[in-house]
Image (cartoon, rainbow, N blue to C red; front, side):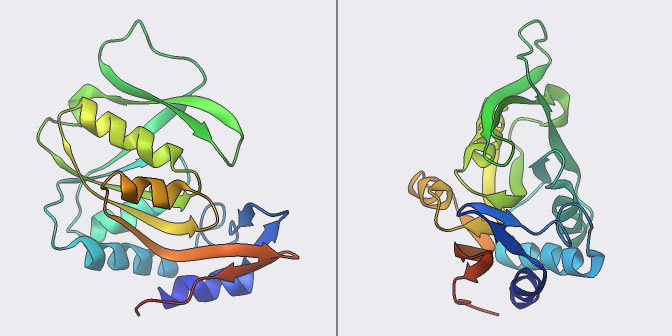
Length: 196
């Protein structure tokens, strides 16, 4: 997606060899026009799939999930909540364990069972894809619910990490709007656009 790649190159930067900072427009300060275009791009990519709801994880994926839901005609958005502990005493939630690459912590994510009906077609949307833990955790929750993953939409994929490759090998349709291939002295390197 041209506008997203331009924003990454103009306002994004890297820290070390694996941290991609784009919080100026994507996940701390939000560029609403860009996020609206991101939602439309995900709609374009997945419009051939039946989609009943959008699923993400708190908090950074929520903005892109909302604009995607709007592009699909105002679908419901569900976001998994994070916790440091398991919810073994509560049978009213679906739950999965995920490791956050960004925060370098292990969390449990959970969704109330009544929010995710069996048989639903669920589009997973997130801001980043690094090692794929968040997307796999969300897909696990969809499986627990007896629902179907219609696809996984990612704003920015870190192509130098294994998440995208792993999810695609598992059979998920993954669409990343931009792919960072590396970091060179703080400058983000992007894959060439396949389409615009």
